[in-house]
Image (cartoon, rainbow, N blue to C red; front, top):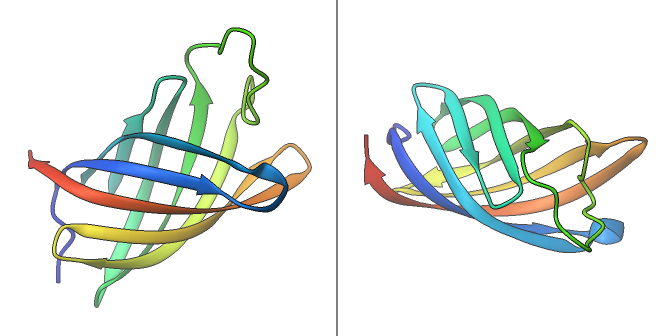
Length: 115
């Protein structure tokens, strides 16, 4: 099964010390990841085989949150993930390296539109 090239909505939940969440959009296109939300943008890559996929991405801040101390704020954050993919939906678990901390996260992607 192939991962469909397209626009996906993404919902991210941080775990442990990094409790928090984010929602945004991601474009998956021939092994490349582009996306973002109201404060951050993401770039990266992925590979897939037999309904499983893994990848890495870098998160960078594009807009500061006024009056809020964002966990990733002002940092370039490297993330690695792996998970499952089927029928236009994906689930992943991963780790974000924030300074000297490792923050675990889960994310769900839903296919929205073809490219």
